[in-house]
Image 1 (cartoon, rainbow over the protein chains, first blue to last red):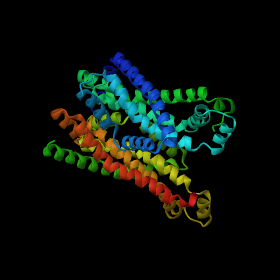
Image 2 (cartoon, chains in turn purple, red):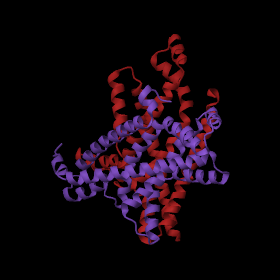
Image 3 (spheres, helix red, strand yellow):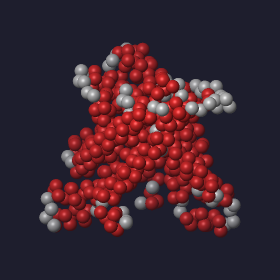
Image 4 (tube, rainbow over the protein chains, first blue to last red):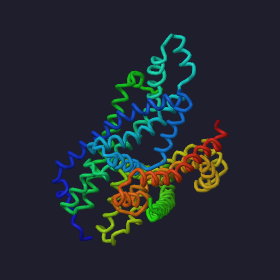
Length: 227
Length: 215
């Protein structure tokens, strides 16, 4: 084998890589926050709303879950542009990722809500909690806690999948590879370096979710057991 | 709307189907080996399989595509064609997920079944082949059908680094020419939906049907 590996040439671009990592993390953060909000909202409607609202939500969930993220991103980002609306590309990418992850979150949270025992709801009614209070404290919070492991792996996948929006010109971590590629021609080394960074990022995001879980769900922290 | 464009989308759809089938075939074969390696009593083998799964699942598919596209030429092979590189990358990806799914299914076969086979004096392979795998297969069908949806959707990524001409690639080309994103990406999305939705529905129906014994 005669090929000389040259990782130095790629690593010399560390400021670009760092910038890319930052953009990837920001994209992931905002899509996570909006995704969980949309997911929880849609899951509540999906389990307790009027029948036409349920139908609309399930149409949304099924359509997103059965089409590729890439096509959704093209559809939304190029589509919005074709309407003459000028959005910063990062906003467009966040919208596309949020719409996508929102559907998956809805499905996961719905499973959590459906696992809440009827007796809990009856107890909440007996205690005189209002509908909003019941939903916030008796339904959504325990539901989120129960599906938290599934949710966090879904969001690690979201971080990895955010590389796809590089195809519409977002300069996140993967998007930086194009620039470095055209200047160094070290294609293989770039992907090795990117791979290692993504593995570390996946670990980082997973750890972040574990810590967040400990902060959000005291039962887990104090008793060391899940629901 | 132009019939040539529709034809091109249909051609892309065919590319998607070919790539999905190849991925499922090779990913399934390797995934089966991974699943068996994962439950191997030899610690080194099972740890190697676990590491393979961990690493493959921690990489974006795009990075896998890049490694599979540019890697072979470095090790002295001729550069892979886009289809070969895409199949290679998707096979790695699918085998890691299928391996993990099937490991779960094999281990979900009730413990007494393993013990009974052992008591009957079956060898390890006989036990696997005649007792465990037939039962694991039944448990494995719904999640496997569900995972096919992921495969079909992820073939879309083959249009990026390696430039394999499948459905989203052709849709992108048409959009570059016409700039009617809602129309052409909408049609492309509907085509994906037409493949994936029946699979999703089937997966759920099979789960209900095959789960009768556990209800």
